[in-house]
Image (cartoon, rainbow, N blue to C red; front, top):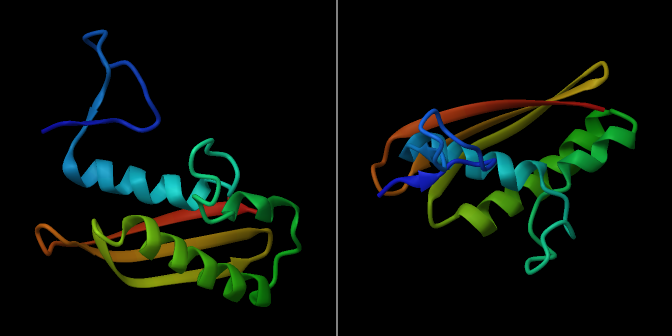
Length: 119
């Protein structure tokens, strides 16, 4: 069954765009990482707060703290979809790089993703 693409968009046919299984999982990971707690009306604790780092001083200590909170958020909200193998953060100058390695629970397929946030 096709999933709705996130963020919501219209495809070339003028209909709601679909996302394949792998793309949908990647979009769900991105949503958890880049949603601040309090942004979702009926789920005020949803998200990891990564976007709040824009105003925080970038440091290895910050990266370690955020790594813990992001790992907890991914396991809490996507634990039934993915098995988190590794989550690492790398603080370089004014950029925080996030590397996520996971396995899809239904297929056992390994995958990884990389995201960057300017702090």
